[in-house]
Every structure is written in structure tokens, then in C-alpha cells.
Image (cartoon, rainbow, N blue to C red; front, side, top):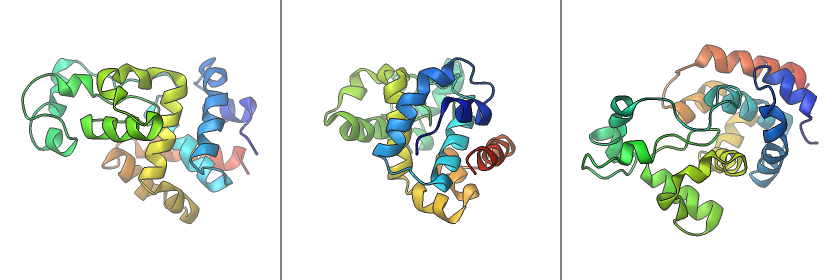
Length: 183
């Protein structure tokens, strides 16, 4: 069963008109990546709701100074960005509904979605609603989050997406709302 517009608006009340823009591509992405049970849908929608500011942002917020953390150093290396201060941090900033971040993730996502490296040259494609939703589903599947959702392990899902527990209170509030709406 697909998520309806009314359900999406109840789960993400601040989404506004973006709910209608994203609804068909979210439903398609969830089917494609096996996010088809109520437990999986609830966890997925809560996480993308937080990561995207309830469907308002498909590009990571932050100025050049903030994004420089992705350009050099240990975090940049983990993300597959080049070791030089050459703008990889800004170019491969978080994008999509789950904020795919870093050159290595863009490459892997590009291979999965397109069968080539096009996201390395046009990372802005992940700002398009279709690819923003598909990339979120791809990341979800790649990180093994369906099995965690099946177990109700929302905390570990958060850590795999975020690397920590940033925004946990908001994520949990969205999850509780999704539990009620998708009962």
C-alpha cells in the first residue's frame, strides 16, 4: 500500500506543498528499495523528514567555512574526497532527502542510479525530487536499514544515517507521528 498525500502531510506537517511534489517519487523509491512494510515506511519517512527539514531542503545547509570540514582531514578522507583543499567539500556536500555526502558516496550512488559516474560531474542532480528520493532509498538499502526498521531499532538507524544522534528528539517525534498515521 502506498502512502497517501494526507498521511504524508500528517507525518510531515511542515512539508506544505512539497508533500505533493515528493509523494509520487517517495512511493516509487520505497517500492524500488524494498521499503514496503509499515515498520520500514515509518522509520524511512521519519528519517528523511528530519534530514530534509520536512522536505524543505535537498542540499546541506552551511557556508564555505562549514563545508570545509569535508574538504581535508580525516572526515574528508572517510568520504573519499581528495586530500587537497580543492572544493570537494562544497561540491559533494550532503544532497538528496537523506543527504548523500562525499565523493565516494556520490560515485556509489551514481553507479546504482545511473550505471555511470554522472553525479561526480553534476552532483546537483540529487537536488531534483526524483533523484533526491531515489538516492535516499539507495542509501537506506545500502546501509541495511530495512532490517533495523524491522527490529524497531530506530537509534541505530539514526546513527547509520547521521554518524551520531544529532536531531534524535526531532527524529523520534516524527517516528511517533508516523507510527500513529501508518497504524
